Length: 294
Image 1 (cartoon, rainbow, N blue to C red):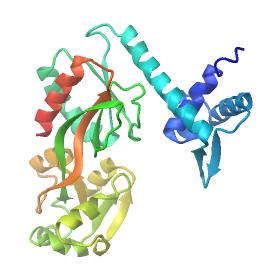
Image 2: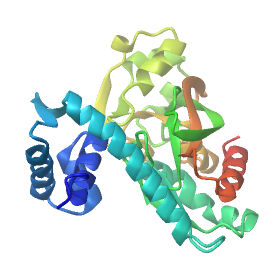
Image 3: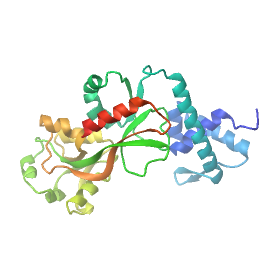
Image 4: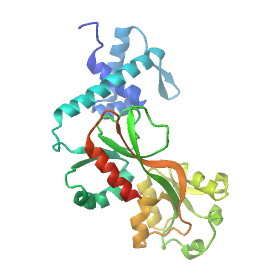
C-alpha cells in the first residue's frame, strides 16, 4: 500500500464520523456497522501514529490532527461527490434529490406534489427525509429545504424563500376550546401546551413576542418530531406551537384554529445547494417554493 495516501475506505469512514460527530451516524450513512467505522478509524490512527479523536463525555472530539484531516478530506470528498454526480447525470434524466425533515415532507411537500408537477412538468424530484440538518456538505442531496438562520456555510448557495412565522394552534375538540379561543395570548401561561424536542426554542421565541417569560409557560408534553406534535394537537390533546405553512391545510379545513395568529422568528425558509452545483432546476424549484411559501 502506498504511503502517499491514507487507506481510502478508512478515510471515507473518518470523514463521515468527523462531519456527523458520531460513529453511529457515520455507520448509518455508510450502511456499515458501528464496529466497522471504529476499525477504519483505528487503521488511520495506526498508519498516522497519532490519535484523530479523543473521548469527551459521551461523545467524541477531534484532535488537532483530526481537525486538519477533517478539513482536507471533507473538501476532497465533497468535490468528488459533486463531480461524480455531474458525470453520471444527463440533463433532465436523473431526478433532483431534495432533502427536508420528515414533518415538512409529510405535512407540506407531499400535499403539493401534484401542483408542483403541473407547474414544473420538466422537474422530477426524489424526496429524502433527513432529520439531521446538513452541515457543511449536503452529501447525496442536490438541495435541501430547511428552516435556518444565518450565517450559512460558505460552501452553500442559499436562496431565502420566506420568513418563518409561528403561532399556537389548537383543535376545536380540545376541552374548553371555546374558553381558550376567547382568551388573550398571555393566558396561555396556564394552558395545556405541547412542545417538540426538534424545536425547543419555539415556545420561548413566541413568548418573548407576547411579553411573557419562557419560565411562565408549562409545556406538558415533549414530542420527538413536529409531525407527532401536530397530530397530538389535531387529536385535541393540547395547544401546539407550529410554523404557519405546516398547519395551513389544517386551518383551511377547520381541523385546527389559530386564534392568536402568527409572529415572525429570526429563522427563514431556505433552499440550499452546494455552491458548485449549477443545476438550473434548483433555481426553478426555489422560485416555485418561494411562491408557495409566500
